[in-house]
Length: 171
Image (cartoon, rainbow, N blue to C red):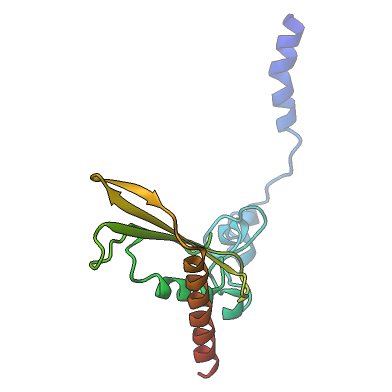
């Protein structure tokens, strides 16, 4: 048992001797290669999972610095702007709104969740789901929403995205 204990104490000390020797000029090297900036990956951040996202790849068609298509993202925000915004994640492509009750029908309320599904401007690149509730007996109860409502909102988003793309192409 004593031999194992002695081996456990000596082994780490022996391993310390097998390193490279540090040269004096390393302490005074001010070259770009010696700076920590280059070792962390990118300009100021730490490089995670081998992907440097500090410089955007592609143009606006790819979504620029966003994780999703910039036209679809902006068009979705524009289309759902009549609803109060709860959460917007431009990297995950999720927009969640809060409940909205139209002044004309105070006994019902709506909310929507939109998913931007990719970096390309495609007709299947956005999904909008609308939720509806009615007030019955003093409490809110889930009510069905016509499937055409979701599709109509998706089509409005796509039309607005095409409009935004044509506006940016004409500049």
